[in-house]
Length: 168
Image 1: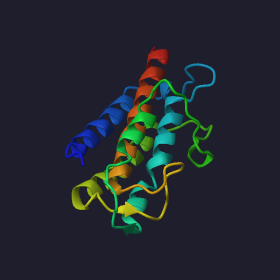
Image 2: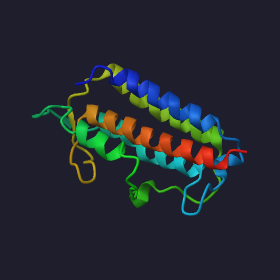
Image 3: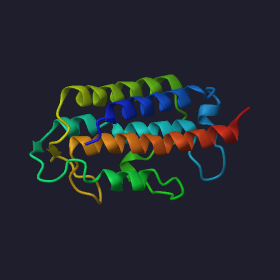
Image 4: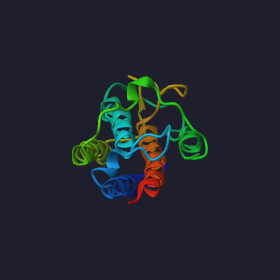
């Protein structure tokens, strides 16, 4: 497994929070173009997608009978392909209401902190058995971290595009 996962996780989450902080309160809820989410909706989607990850990582596990990083290339190829538009499952879609930038940033920071604690204090090779990832099956803790990183990078890229469209 990649020993640089700690550094990549920290850099990715820091870049996301820095990108969110660059938006004005009004810009955070401004639609950049038809059919797009606002920055606030994008941040809410990221939060919804990772909120349960610490519980899944610390839930039921089993010894891994394969390379614990086996699904990493697939995770990276799916989520880091910025040209392909994806459809989110309903349960992680953002709501229409305006978002509070400071509140969302704090919630993201808290959830990322829980994942950071797991990276630091737990073995990442067990397979998490409580919740399989849609279309890919059970992930190891390491693969859940890879998902958190790649999904966050994908939407940080999206946030930067939104920012470039609404810059005042």
